[in-house]
Image (cartoon, rainbow, N blue to C red; front, side):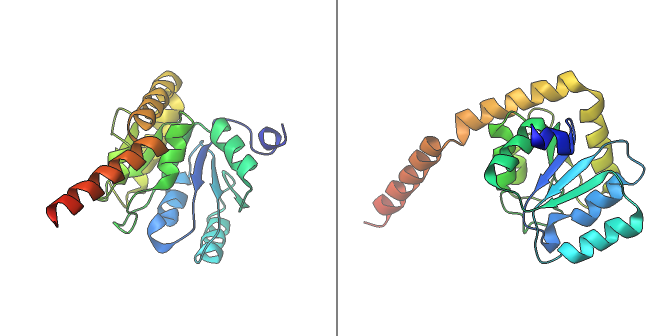
Length: 188
């Protein structure tokens, strides 16, 4: 397969629009001296700054494929070890990438920013939740999942189960319907 030939397996994966709150600068610092690899998919307002910083840092373990089509994204999700979302500000309200990760039975790493990210990713169960703005904590979490493939696999399975129990389209739709019914009932 072309994607496996280009990127291999067991890398960490970031997918998203490159915005100020995504913590990509933290991810780059976490990758300094790391034997892990990360594939950073997407583009956005801070792209030039992030690419320039990675080049200045001499990071040969970080790859930037840019925007990818859906089939490539799915292949990357299947090939990766885990998905990492280093967002360090509460501006990251939910983290759809985490749901995609769970859907493909991949463990997640995110930071505790007081938003929905740690609702999707339950620390120690579906992945790891680290302190925000901490390259060291992010690096340690990545090392843990890299060095413990069986625990990583189990976390991925639990992430998939949590997705099926809480986040499918049918379940989310029913939850929204119930919320609207309660709101309407209280306003009449």
